[in-house]
Length: 115
Length: 115
Image (cartoon, rainbow over all chains, first blue to last red; front, side):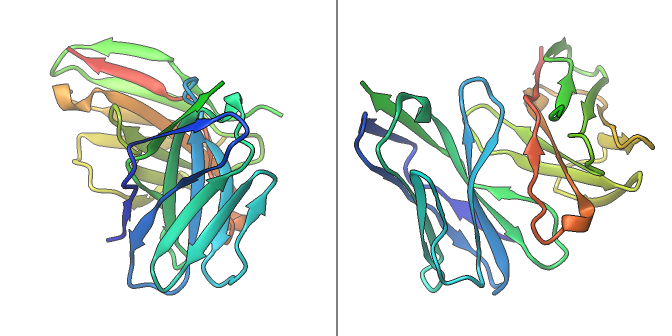
């Protein structure tokens, strides 16, 4: 079974600054997908960014970027130029690329943005 | 374009009762997954439905059952409710033919409280 670990329960960042969220995972597979989801207080989970394990290049979506270290099984999320709207719970998630349809989530990191 | 919708928003039940939660997938989606999210935790996969059949199941007891209708909407049923079933229940939809990407779009959830 895949295990996803987020070791930072809470992170605080000043508006316009950068924050990095950590995620590690445990798998014996070589082909998989990794995701970061954002869950604002309104509860609706939104996909922030995804990474295919076979791609060496780190994914980027506007102010959001990842640092994917396959050998270390590490997948961190960097939020640049933080905005008040970035305040939310962030979940790291794993999905196998081989006939497994479920997402396995970490426990989440709460991000607060200070004005 | 309507996103994933869930009903009801909130529900209060007592131990031993049965509950039915409903989900309508995003327009054009044919696959529905259900997740349980305990307070302060990441979502846990319950099961996924495709072509009106349960395609994959997580580590949940048989008290949790589901159904998918020809219009792709889905129900989650929980029998003999326990206090520990109190959680946010999330529905996510996706499109099977894009399995490689299989981005799951989440609904706002149903908050179930068992007293």
